[in-house]
Length: 142
Ligand SMILES: [Zn+2]
Ligand SMILES: [Zn+2]
Image (tube, rainbow, N blue to C red; front, side):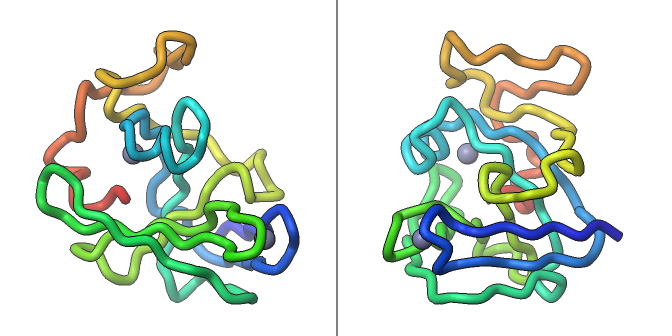
């Protein structure tokens, strides 16, 4: 069991997670670059039932190349990206490294969409890297 807490920049949205991390990894896709404003997103997946959210978020939904619909929940006040979701995978929620206080629990297991990574992003060669999204992980990541 891992306990993770965190909040947005202004503090209006916060969360407390208590449960197992199901998967964590870095996504270098263009969508993640644009939405985070960073070189890549570090996503930490948990069961939605294990995450208690306080404060209201606003949701942006978009369709990716595979036809899958993804959701991005953000703080309507300060704009911090807080939670990711995947319509094909209800019940799973992605937390984001930046808003997590207990960063020592976050150890990405893989890099995906390395084909669109920023030249200045240095990949950790000790974990698997995938050019795109491996088919098996497709349904999981958001
Ligand atoms: Zn905020
Ligand atoms: Zn991505």
